Image: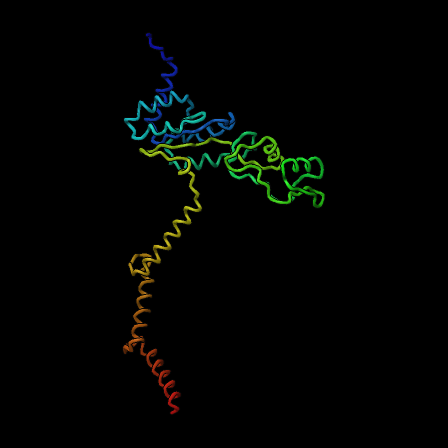
Length: 284
């Protein structure tokens, strides 16, 4: 049986991918599904000096990954993340920095019927921009409790429009748009990144920087307090430890009535107070 001849363009694409994999230490998988062409071109311009983006068919990407998996440990793990319409991004940029750059350039987008809610979508209680009219009936038909307050329609209590993970119904999508609620983001979706044998997923890359810094500060405070309590000297705590040691020694000297020049005044004052108390008790 004759072998099917592989078109030259496919071979060229695989070779091109292999070349980029050899050239760059960081290899990422992007899902370009439902990404508008204008947004894609805009991101390519913004990343021009930092990264190379290459779109290709899943089969061709897999062939390139298979061909070079012996040269880069765990490289084949990236195959798991070739969903939707995959593209490859090649860079020398730190993976976390790359993820942050891509996230910063996303823009909000309205919901479309059938899309999966990324979080609980709630219409909050309070005034709306709508005047009394057909919107009252629309709210009522969807189960939203609403009335008229000061010439505007007001939602009486929070309404769960769609729960996280559920498809958004057509009428709900329309209502969310009218309310100005845009629960989605338009932009490149960085799914996973490979570096030095490790594959970082979206969950790992999405670091809350403020929480991360807060945790480091808390850990530093705990470590400092522990070093003081255990009397473990460091450059940062040595002054406090000396002050604490002096105070502790002074307290011991006063309690043990040790005649020493730094506590003699306190000892005389203590003796005087005790004598006065005894004199009073004995009515001398």
